[in-house]
Image 1 (cartoon, rainbow, N blue to C red):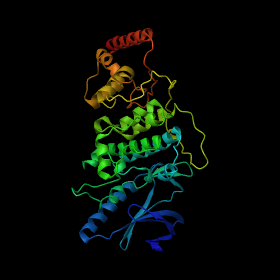
Image 2: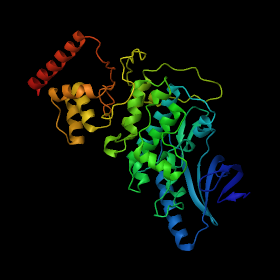
Image 3: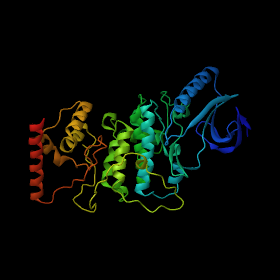
Image 4: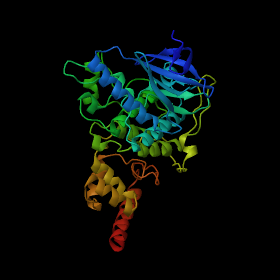
Amino acid sequence: MISHLGRYEVVGELGQGAMGVVYKATDPLIDRIVAIKTITLSLAQEERDEYEARFYQEAKAAGRLSHPNIVTIYDVGRSGDIAYIAMEFLQGRELRDILNDDKLLPVDQVLDIVTQVAMGLAYAHEHGIIHRDIKPSNIMVGRDCQVKITDFGIARMASAGVRTQTGMVLGSPKYMSPEQVMGKLTDQRSDIFSLGVMLYEMLTGQPAFTGENVNAIMYQTLNAIPQPPKSLNPAVPEMLNFIVAKALAKDVENRYQNARDLANDLRACRGTIPSSVFSADVPKPVSAASATDDVPGVDSGDESDPGVTMRLSPSFDSAAATMRLAAMTASQEDVDELSKTFKMARPSIEEINRAAPQAPVFSKRTLNNPAHPAAETRPSRSGGILLMAIVALILIGLISALLF
């Protein structure tokens, strides 16, 4: 084992990372314990120069990020044929290890963890950094209950030397977005898809996309629609089915457009679930909602009601469905903003009524409006209730016409 990397004194080996050995070391200048990830530059000179330059560029970009849910990078350097990154030393467990314990985490814990990851992603995306390899092994759950994303900005380096015959860069196949599978340019919405895959696995105990080999998994990612999580885990609330479906939309335009919206929906869903009793061997993550503005919860009602639609409507992921929902429940300003985003006209009451029987009504005022968590709407059991709903919609239309 090496004894020094730059000024850092290596104490021991923590494990093997995707790009090289990970060491525990001390910084003698300030007497601080750090984790050091290393990358061996054993390549041809031309490839090595390009690889090293890209490595430094990515590491420096990640080093500018300062957020409680992103591991802090302190330094980047080179020692002989080894490039290294000195970063915050975390005491805790990889989320991958927690999930490998062969038991499902309570849904409230899952939401707490994923919300923190979404908030970290939102911050990074707002600063122009895309992770590209969100997966459980890149998430740390600390002893202090803080969730941290690791390998930010450098994850692309891990897969740079692993290519298919067509030259497509491979990441982690089970968590790749459809656009990554096809070798297209990626943006923040690819990270959101990967986080949706991770959320699905945490809720159900099984991957969203499976196959006997990489090609089979990629085919599933492009073509398969996973079962709703609630069908595999009855503890999952109906609202979470829709959140997962939106995160896993194949078309990036129908997906969550930013991670902050996803985090807001997860917090609203979390507000409907009572806290579970935590077991001693699983760290309890602190909800990211505790450090942000409170989002009021909603009454999820009796989910044993057989009248509740248990399967997702294929139209849920469409922009039109979201617009119809917003027109029924959101403020005029929010609907106008959504209309500009989708480049769609506000639907009429007649259009809403015609579409209503074709899709379940989601229990949020709009997935893109964190200030307005929704109350769940259930299918009517009597003609009287249906009549009242129709009258209410007509009144809303008349008031809107008078005011606007």
